[in-house]
Length: 275
Length: 132
Image (cartoon, rainbow over all chains, first blue to last red; front, side):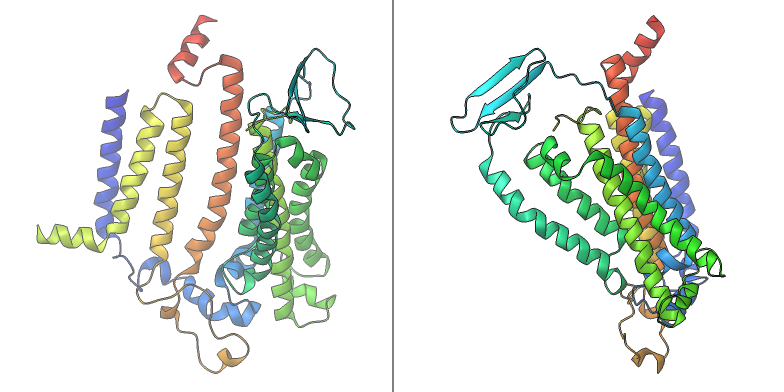
């Protein structure tokens, strides 16, 4: 198998390298990729959409359908992770607790638990018992800044590199940091599973709903120009705000799906402990 | 020889993406462990991202964000040669996030396989399938 694989790889690699003969040189301004549709985007985008960042305007306006279905793909990925892994059966016959003031660990077998309201004990993971003061403190300081930065990346997607996808990933990462530094249960208290599912659907809904709103206002699907009839602004500015609305939808969907995939995979769907 | 060196230096981005892509393809075909196959798949996707982004490049151009904002741009035309091609960046922006989520689904499937067969080695899984 290894030898056949090597032969296949060498053959296809040689074929691809042979094909590069006809490719344009690196950095050639007259290459076919940048002579057909991209000059129009570069010259007209600012005039038509009022967004200086061309990547954002193409992503959410000219190629709006593409991005909408990419968001749907992400939503479907989160949904399939949930369906594949989520286990609602509780397998809690081995529980570990730590007495907070003395640091003594309790191991409870059977279906007995310490009441959740008890302030003297905290539940700890089976695999990882040490108490990390430094990691937890640094995480507590860092998370608000990560989240503010994520919102900045979202809101400045029009003027600087950024947008819904990047901001959403950063925002989701802030919750994953909590899950790693504390434990999975702490992160899930902050961001409940039900909210997670609702938000990932809401993101796609905002995107498709904005498109449908344009349809209702008499234009084409995802043609944000029509928003000018309900917003007090001219059509070009309405397109910029339509892009922002769509980016917010992408942000919410990506953030929720990142967290839901992480939680489902590390805890094998039981949502009690992991990593 | 001179022609070959000229060819390699002028198009080294294609050489790099081909090498990376073949590393990923080899890992997907020849590796026995499912997680290693997934890592190979990720390397493959990264090679494609590298390919697209390197296509977008233009010599002497800057990132695709129009500099003069706020009315002054209407006076003189935007020169196409000043900005790199934004389209491959858009395609790859979505491709990165989609590749992360497909990787998540693949990992979820791997977790399921591990729960059922208690192994991630391909030959052992096949052996257990034949035993049944």
